[in-house]
Image 1 (cartoon, rainbow, N blue to C red):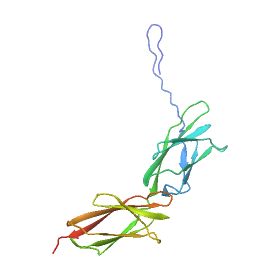
Image 2: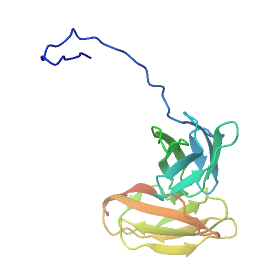
Image 3: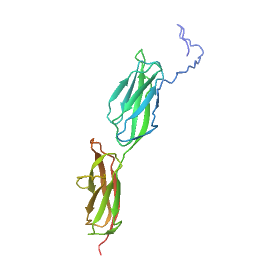
Length: 203
């Protein structure tokens, strides 16, 4: 900083240093930074500056949800609409004077609950049927949707034990891919698993 008189003469510069307190809300979750598909995960935001409200934006839905803090300055938010895999929650607070704090981006991982795939036999030539068994990880699985080599999707019901079996007869050699996901009675779909297998030349 320097001053200038009417004659245009400048004073010696003087430097003033000041500190701005970090107002970013902190975010914690009882499940840490991991969750399970289909199970709500709670998070708590502690405001960085005195604020009458806190807001969180879901990375999956893009929707923002305001929450009024408790007397101790915390605000509880339940996240129940997420994609399998990595997600994030953007949290900020707003002061009584309308000032918005710095955003905190809280990253967390949701277990996709993708089914397990087994094949029998483990390898074989073109033209030999391969039996694939789908084993559930998602609770209450009632059906599986699969495709072979990124072709048409086919949905089939799960058995009483939650498993399902499909037989595929390869027509071409090389590495092939079986993609599958499961769905439960509530309509919730698991993450997809891409299972690769090898088909030998005929003869």
